[in-house]
Image (cartoon, rainbow, N blue to C red):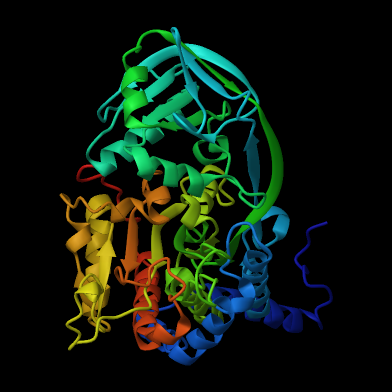
Length: 504
C-alpha cells in the first residue's frame, strides 16, 4: 500500500531521506566525474619508461622462447598480461567472463601420394608443381574462374579461383579476401617463385609437428573453408590456360587441433549513453619463436620491438587508465592479438567473432614496433627507414576518417608534439604497411583506425631484436600520446565517421 509515509515511521523519515539524497547525489556525482583533458595528462604520467622496461624484461625474455603461436611461451605471455589486468581491476572482455578469447588452430599433414591437382589431361604434383597452404581431407571439382584485377564482385561462389599475378600488393590482397568472402571453393595463385627460390620456399614451408594454422573459415567467415594453393609460374601458366574448364583437387591429410588466445579487457566509460561504445586499443603479443638450425648460440627470436614494445605500451596504458577514478565518456577496449605474425589471425578472428556488440567500436588505435629510434647523428643506411627519437610513423587515419585524422593531429599538437611522419599514410602509398598490422582487420570492418609504427630496422625478425636496443623513452612518449588520443576520441560528442579513401 502506497501511503505518504514511504520511509517508515515519521521518526525515521529524516534519516532515510538523508541517506536517499546522499545516494542520489553520490550517483549523480559519480556519473559526472568525467575524465577531462587536464585529468588525462595527470593519468598519462603513470606511463613510464621504468614500468615499460619491467614488463618487457619478462615479455622478451629467453624463457618465453619467442612467443610463437602456439607455444608454452605464448601462453606464459598471455597469462602474464591477464594476471596484471585482474590485479588492476579491468573488466574481462573475453569468452565466458574471462580475459581470453579462444581461437582454434589446426595442423595439417598432407599425404604427397594422395594429394592431387588435375585439369583436363594434365596432372600436377604436390611440392614439385604446387603447394597447399590450407585444405581439408576430401575431393572437390568446380569450374575455373580467372581473377586478374581488383573488383567489387567476381561471382566466385562455388568456383575454383585462378588468381593471376596482380602487381599492386594492396589489390592482390583485396582480391584474395574478396573471392574467399564470396564463397570460392579454392584459390590457386601464382607464387612468382621459380627454380631454386621455389625449392627453398617449399622446404621452408614443410609442416612440422608444431606448425598450426588458423582455418580460413575462421578468418574470413566462410563456412566452406576454401583450399589455398600456390604454384610455380611455369605450371601456373599451363593451369591458367584451362580457365572455364572443371578442375579437381583431391586432398589426403591428417588434422590436429590446438588453441591460442586473444586477451581482451574493458575500462567502462562514464556516460550512460556512450559507455556502450568503445575506443579499441590494440597490439600483438606473439612473435616468430625459435630456430634451432641457426648458426651461433642464439636461437630465439625475442621480438623485443616486434611487438614486445606495443604489448607493454598497451599494458601500461591500461594500467594508467584503471588507476584513475575519472573515466572518459566512452569505454576503452584493450585487445592483445595473437598470431599477427602468421597473418593477422587474432584481429581477423576478433572482428569475425566480436565479444562486444557489432557496430559499437568507434575507432581502433594500434601499436606495433614503437620501441626503436634512429639517433640524430646515425649515418647508417641500414637505419634509414627508422623514425627519429621524437618521431613516429602514423598510418591509417587519412584513409579511414578525416575526423579521426584531425583528432590524432590535434591531440599531438596540444601534448608532446611528436614528429608525425605521414609517409605511409598517403593515399597513394604503395608500401602496403596499411595492411601489415592488426588495424587492417578493423578498417575492413568499417572502423576508423590509426597505427603508430616506429619503422623498419635490420633487427626486424632477427634474433638480434633484443631488449638492449629498445628506446624506452620513445615508447613512453608514444604510449602517453596514444592514451591521450584515445581519451579525446572517447570524449567526442559523436563518433568519427568512417570514410574509405585511397586505393585499398
